[in-house]
Image 1 (cartoon, protein in one colour):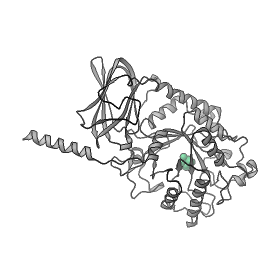
Image 2 (spheres, helix red, strand yellow; image 1 turned 60 degrees about the vertical axis):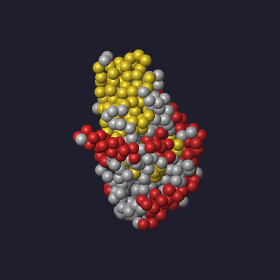
Image 3 (cartoon, protein in one colour; image 1 turned 90 degrees about the vertical axis):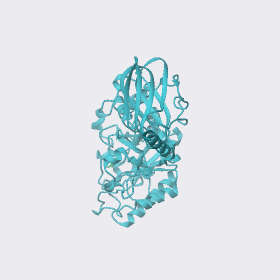
Image 4 (tube, protein in one colour; image 1 turned 90 degrees about the horizontal axis):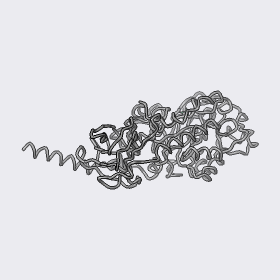
Length: 461
Ligand code: FUL
């Protein structure tokens, strides 16, 4: 009697797993997940005044790069293995890097190229030439625009969004800063987020929009480039808005396990202490090893890495930053070159074929596992797991067993999502087995990979 009751429970639970409906990403969000790592460029009057937050009162003539070269930015991005560039078209000081008709504080009023220059035009063209995704940061907070703090400013912001999409598209990602300080008249703006969102949707439905709470991409809750060890791509946003009414930074960092909407996290961080270029920080550029560590803690936790690399007063990315970026790329290439799982014997198809579009299914948690047997013991210290996120994110907790000299080493973790990179002290393993301890629905594993990376790069908690 007891036995049949247990069997019924297991049966019902299995059925629930099979029919559970998970939130899923849109095609554009899926493409964005695959972009993994891209650059941020903070550039504007602050570059020349040595500030982080301009007042909005800076004279336009301060903006005067001597040798602005967006193609150089693209070459650096390419050499870093980045997939795109996001540019601060307008930071909080309100200065527009394009000649907006809706502001008198723009490149047009500056001396750069006799007021004929247009940074957005140059960068969007360069990104096209180099095959990089072009994206735009647009701060709603504007310390210069006279309309800021009145309903009219929402019109201005919508007009600026319209200009950008009409003249410089396609735009891959639009980045909205949640900051909401005072404008030139001492007033704060009540942002019309719904109208802003509707405007983008109408003009460019393929653009993914970032803010603290999406609608397509969320802030990770810190500016250190670090996602939660548990990182759900799902979030509940009802009752919240970007800025001070956003969910707690802890929630943004981890997402909501049962969140209704697919709003994955993006980890923004600067290669330097500040967001804008400051000469005195030239000796504080993050090393390739530090950048690799951030990669493990962002991309390796299922998020993306948005790394800020600010051009200097010439309008060029310095050699110091470029060298660090090239070193970072080299570390990624060396680390993830030799995947031992490709040659291993697998108990199912679809999860060791170096193809994230195929997957193996685990229907029975705790019992069923995915197994890989190496042809000979291999020294490994890094395992990469990928869920088939096209169908949602399911894994709540997993266990990896490594067969080492007849014994079993165990590693455990929580979420997987787009990519989970686990590092550990190197062992000679005969094989790998992945068990799911808990999940929200049927588990689809797109890939298990194993590597031996440089010991020095092992993630230190
Ligand atoms: C913040 C801004 O206040 C910083 O200046 C920077 O742009 C960063 C990416 O977002 O909210």
